[in-house]
Image (cartoon, rainbow, N blue to C red):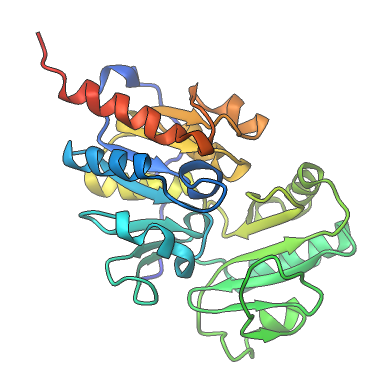
Length: 299
């Protein structure tokens, strides 16, 4: 189902002190956050996720990864089976297992907006190269580096990949990826946001100068807000974890949020708290405390 209609506000509204409300949902990034650097989920984290679900706290994985890269956590989705992928561009049911996922919600990047973004960023940062992430396909320019261990479905200039005549034109575009071989990552992000303006949402999650460009208003935060609204969960009842700029909006929106010990400075500034690094099971450390508080008998 495609959905680019009205978006629930992803701006935190401080009606109630979040610390006074028991959490109902945990939203966690994956790479650099829940996953260790070797991309594994530690036994301690597996146990913490299970304990949270057993205590009645839903766990949502909220990631920049495409759905086809979700096998690393597909065994840990528990009851609802849903994950937010592509920085909010898709809500995916992972119950079918690797290769059998189902798109529940798609918030696509319109091709006209994508073409505008490509043109504007080419002008602002010559040397930028692109890849196109669609619901079931991955396409790239010939000069785009092998940043992802996969074979693209086709090679062509971005303008051709995004044209209405391309063979995959009927398939929604989730995001485009823009890579620059020389620029500083944060400087590239700032430049791209200024150049592209409100035609698309621009962020990054990589340590390199690799940007992720989604539809206007599409972010981890806005899609998480939609999922929570459908469940009657307020932002004060959400606890979020992240480490990179693509997590900033989500951490700002959630009632309680934690930057990892390895987080980007902008993430530390956005979060209401901080935990230890991903390799030290920082997410599990906080979840264990939350579950203990929820199960503690009240006087």
